[in-house]
Image: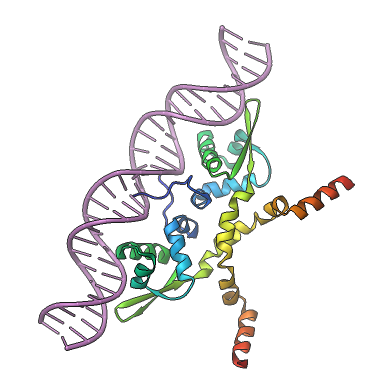
Length: 111
Length: 111
DNA sequence: TTGACATATTCCCATATAGGAATATATTGA
DNA sequence: TCAATATATTCCTATATGGGAATATGTCAA
């Protein structure tokens, strides 16, 4: 077997750092392919291809206007990642917050 | 070029659904390779290889005990994903929360 | 030392990229 | 119709998988 397809789900689509950068850009508003090309200094096919991957996992919305296509982030499609990562949030709160850690220790000693 | 290495960062390591499942298991405590094999019903090399990837991005901690190796989740290594995803949380709160949406509409009409 | 157990590593292969270059498609305006 | 603009697609290649099978490494116990 090979790796899972990048178009399988947001986890795979977002693994690529260029696509994360593109997502961050599109979070700021609507962009034309040409505008993305100018903003990120990528080649035009590179932009179109990355947008295509994001479109296939519903991470971007596409709108036609004349010969232009306008893209924007569909942030809701990031929720699966959010939901998955949130189940681990509890684990590092106790580990990193020194006050919390201190309080936990006190509580332990009170038992 | 090819895809980014799975061992480049947690984003790439976590893209694989099997590794996400393994992470969920290890969040529940300490596991031996053999115990993971039994729990997930994977082959032993498969488990060792996936653990190796997770180890290289610091997502698991490894401890030796006799001929056994005991692994557990290093949840803090998930924080980069958490941090990245949190910057988009604001966008779907307004979109999904119907009360929030309702209030936003009211506010609009007041202008 | 030897055998059994626990784990890691190597070898192999089908598969899927990402990016560059070239080209195709679609739309507009003259 | 034709040229220009905007975007998508195809072709190519180097690279990196993930899993199975086989094997190597390490450690214990008798």
